[in-house]
Image (tube, rainbow, N blue to C red):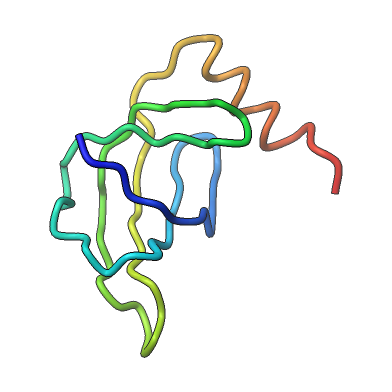
Length: 88
């Protein structure tokens, strides 16, 4: 598979939105399965693309919306720890 870099603009227990620093988003279409990796947490989550906004507003990065697929108990724990147990 191919790896693309971006930053999370929104994340919850069931979905996330990622802004890509690259304009090459031709790999993604709704329904496409992906692996979503949060590097700082060493967390990889299976997900499915729900929407791709190629240019949400003038000059903005492409925005990919994903929904997490069934997570293992350990993946759920790590995600909840990330969402609710971090300082700040």
